[in-house]
Amino acid sequence: MVALWFAASDRPDSTGALLGIHTDYLQGHEGVPTSGSYAAEIADMVVQASEGRENLRIWEPAVVSPRVAAQHSQFAYSLVVERPYGTLKLPTEQTSGVRLIALKPPLKRECLAFLRGVMDIGWQTLFPDLDGFGRAWGAHPPEDVDRW
Image (cartoon, rainbow, N blue to C red; front, side, top):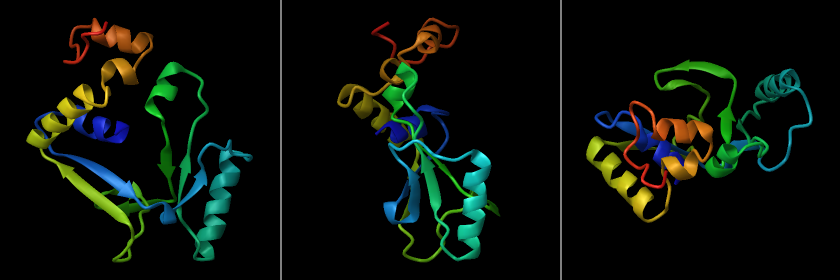
């Protein structure tokens, strides 16, 4: 739901995208701190790719701030590739478990209304820190700042 909010909340008059990746194609450190350095992680990815065992990796940051806790952040990374959709190396076989959902502007508005009204997901809940407060009272506040 948080990923949907980020996909729908920016550029309201443009089509957005929500990407879903089946967990069979992920490997990583959900809830477990990485043990090695970034360089070691990349070196391991290169070795696995040469053995035909490459997968996207995910990383979940430690909860160090209210924002990180509220957003339930997870980040996907891979070896860099040049593809029309970007540089993340997604599985390419026909039944890859990758789904892309287009969010046209009317659907974005509907999703945001649902997320705000039913799921309580919006600026106040995803940015419960000083930056969120500043945005709420700034020159271009988001629409859903009634709690501030």
